[in-house]
Image (cartoon, rainbow, N blue to C red; front, top):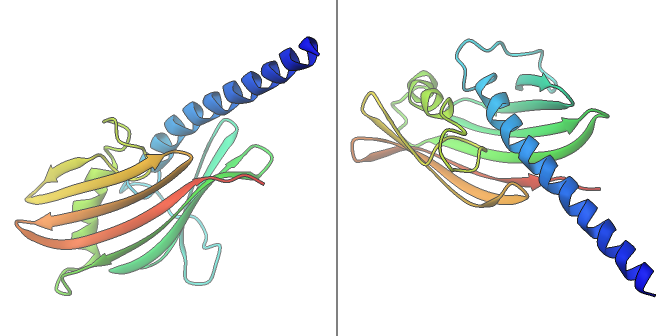
Length: 176
């Protein structure tokens, strides 16, 4: 009986280590992937995977990141990370809206992308940008609750005291 208990603990401990290693790798991979895709103004879009979508993809080692979204000043999207055998292991859905109808998608991009390039540079979860970033009179904030396994977040951009943009996101680990 004692041997059985010891084996169960070893299996549990081994599973825990595997999860911790994977989450650590995923954490750094997400920050890297985001800086190589939408956040990076030089990143090239890939062929659309669905009618009307805009898509980015990045791979490094055994992980592949795919971001697909629809729209412009009002948009929704999804990010998925796949492991080497094309198994989805992490995902996030998001919906964003420009609150000031006079502002173009380009104006929001100019405020948003520099903030998103800072992903992983503070202790914020690397699913969008840092907690705070200021650029050319725009103030970006991202508040996130949870961890890489399960989270919810709200991203905002202010111009002066006016909130001009908001995005809500949620996601986490995908398991069969």
